[in-house]
Image (cartoon, rainbow, N blue to C red; front, top):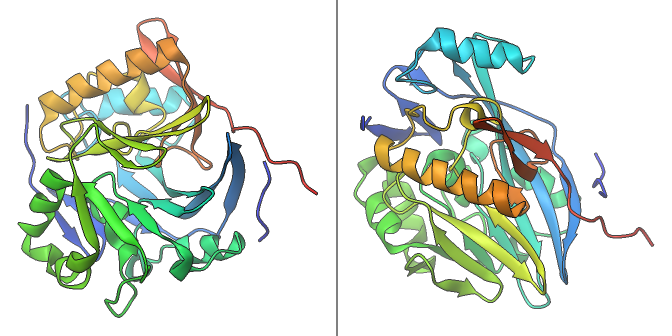
Length: 304
């Protein structure tokens, strides 16, 4: 393919880059590689397609305090199958005048992620990536940091994440391969810090202990990577008050989600939502007492 121009707490564990919650499993589905190109001020950006995650509508992840029947009604209203929730798994690549920055890394090769093949469509090599900004430590965001044989997938990159998130990752035995392979490359920060020029970490608490978003700024142009503030473009926006089984602190995540949606709907700031339908760029709008997703790709770079 060519580059396109254009408070219930549930224990989480990571197995081969797949998040497990109770008995509900997000099953990865392979996709063809794709890279959607856009411009952000003086920055060149790409949305990199990695995979899909399919989650059963069984009341264990979406609408855990509402029930599968109500979730099914929202899915039906959006024209989606009612027995499952299909989520995108995408990542951002931003080229600044002096850096090549990757935001999250997808599921990784052991789970069939297409990130590296999508990266190849941009003409960039893994060893050209200078910085990786991690929103949080779930397997569909850090899985691609390692190759299939457990080596660093981006050998020259500094890996940035919140100090609290790195501590949490290190505390989980299942993450030992990441700790062993990547510790020397990790650089931590506190939410609110400018991590690298043009990239500020935004605290969005509740999903994991150190979950953050990233506001990317070039001149007057801005784009907010919301990480896992929302998962489903249908369910998360229609009912932000519903608890999500992937959140380590459901009450705190709900407060963060409702606050972010209200602010984003008022400001019309463009966002990148890595689990929304590819290419995951758009705006959140207010619809009655709820919200909705409006895909809105950023200005495309003219083709020479």
